[in-house]
Image 1 (cartoon, one colour):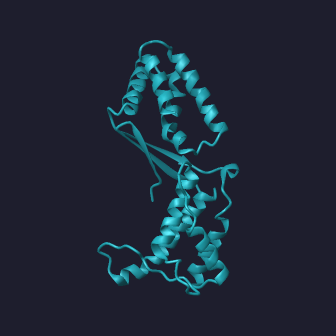
Image 2 (cartoon, one colour):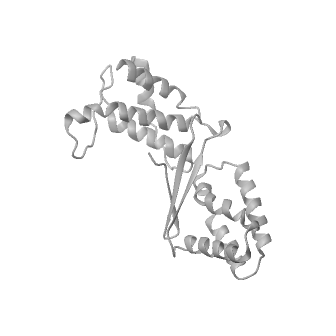
Image 3 (cartoon, one colour):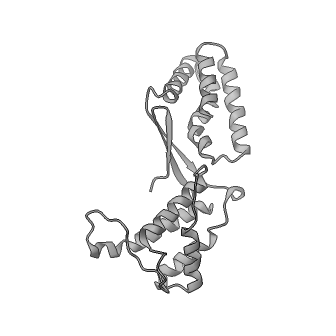
Length: 217
């Protein structure tokens, strides 16, 4: 996707295509993205660039030239840049496989106990391997599983789950015990995003021409 954009930017900068043609191409590309899985990471990586190019037709020629040059420099690695996108996963793209996990964790937050069946459901979730991560949903799921593994050991045969952070840094044991509700709240928040119930921000940071996508806390 980045290579295709770079070609168009180069064509514009050497006057092979006009501002109007660049604008039309960007609008067509935007429509194609929206028809597919717009939350593919390869699409999200360039979303901020494409959306701005899709509005380039209304800019003065000099401003458009500067914008195109800036994006060309970003994609070629000459300069760093960052974009933020507010998103909410639409129902047609929501994965339903973790819908039950939120109810289980909310029950645990209230009662600090779970049935064997509920514990087994969580064990099945943490045993899943999310690889490779190609979509925003997969990225969210990977974070959810990672946080569950951080706080709980699901390899034990106990009839209940026990909070035990695997890794800490300058955190006293007494404070560690108070972090459980914070961790569970964060997991539930990510589940709301994963289940399409909540909007959230996605950050894209470009360094050396590569876009790094992250979901801020």
